[in-house]
Length: 315
Image 1: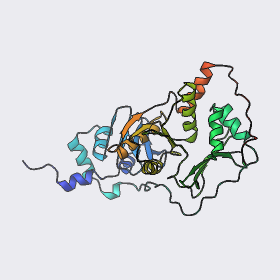
Image 2: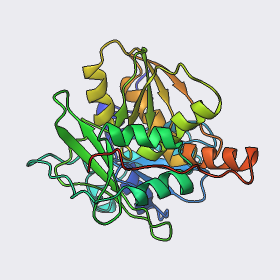
Image 3: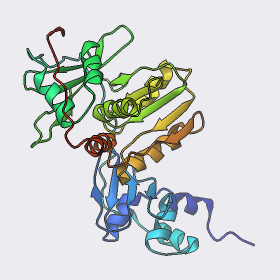
């Protein structure tokens, strides 16, 4: 019996850019991050920014271009391959290449320090409900400080204690602001080093600190796991941290509970899954900061954050 398609035709079908195909068929494709696109109205259908893979979390489906056409156009495998091999390059729109993690081109210059910590203490402790001792420890370790614009600055260091990464987060609750400082190296992220064989991965520094707060609120006093903030969604912080900590054999994914967070969690499993054992700890809310805020509100409606002192910290 002769093959219905040649190997070359199947290869062609499996290498059509999914984003370009969806656009050519009139689907509303929206870029939502440097890592992914979304087609609204299809139950959380996300496409990798390189156009090679897709996932739909509500239906637990995913795959490459052929599976995408089967799913979205309700075609058989044979008809999906026919559809894709019948396309010409002129039919497919141009899709901007996927962005890669930016290259470090020079020395990192940290933002100028403020003469006070009061704005970041007020924001992190009173607004974000992060435990004051946890905030203080990060300040003492020089991994957190306030800049002259009253922003939080989260810092990552190399093994010689040289600052290599810095991310800024605004303290104005009415206007969100966040950015990585130019020449930040994502290979040295904001983190909390542990002594166990497990690495917990978070999207943000605030979620990492919120997780530590939740442990403390639940009287978990012997927590030894490593904690790492990706500063968004990036493989580089995980990859480099694992290289520096070869005793880690397990990874707990603590990403946001939304589709975008869980989409990237799946991508992490695909990239590192052959070497590490994975678990997921999904927050009871959008993220772990929302969880800690709701938890504190639930256990005490009139909880007051105790006074703090910044006199002992070196500016």
